[in-house]
Length: 155
Length: 300
Image (cartoon, rainbow over all chains, first blue to last red):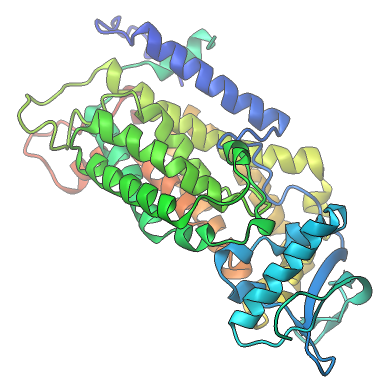
């Protein structure tokens, strides 16, 4: 980033507007980066920024058929609009009741569209200790039932 | 607003072909992302699942499928035109503006997706620039532009953005996790969790996670590469180290966690590699022994 010693003065310097444009843009970019501030598309660049522990809290959503069999909602296999499951589940408790019901309804509808039977949607809070391994897999998480909803439509 | 020494570097004359290469690379990348993005699927998302970011908070659901189809067609067409350099000063800003809400949709699921953000941010300095002055349909009828200050700052600003993105990623790890990001079991637990959420155990993730020392080394290398990346601005030759390192990092994340960051890696390659100088070395232009017009600061 050094200037060449003895370099001749630029006969065609960058215009003032370009200097202001770059200055303001880089200032905003740096402020967001340093402060971790999200002003999308400017961002705080928090990629894997937190230190994970072996014991990890999370949530699991399952559908229940008429015979009481539970099946995890296959979020990865659903359309892209359903892929925010981790964040929706994390904030589920704070949603108004009507919104919670609408979320359940949306998940049930997507599972039914794939031929699944849904009489009920259950949301479990989970605690997984990923350091406890059973072969190549983690030991099953400890689960606590937090929410149950019965979406409308065919079971 | 900008320290004098940094200003001198940012606004030094540049090669119009380097700017053109960045336009072609980023424009082509944007076109590829626009053509393959999940926007039509996102447009059918039930409103209850909508978690908008930024200006999409003005809406109570994803934009309609019709609006998304129109925006995608406009953005894609404009991106292709900007890539070939037709009406560049219009088509590049139109492509960027039309792409913005589409890319925002991908981050409106509750989490910021950084994959395309670096691409969008690196395109910003090109929007008002003379990016179509070389290697473009616009330039066919004009005499070849020589080096000038108009062609340096857009590329160097994009280089600062790339370097800053990795530096701030590393800084966020230090600020939020501290040394434990490297010295603790962090990376092992991340990789175990990533493997456990995949349909089949991931052998690459498990290979690292099962070896604590290797996991610490990979974590330390990641942090070193991210925090050290701005050195490429000071010593351009270090790009030979840092650019392959971040490409390898993204490839590793893809292999172990199945997270696709190829657009970010491609953006780094487009912006940090001096493509005209490389082309001059690979295909002599018949201009004698004189090497290509590599800017002074890039010859060191």
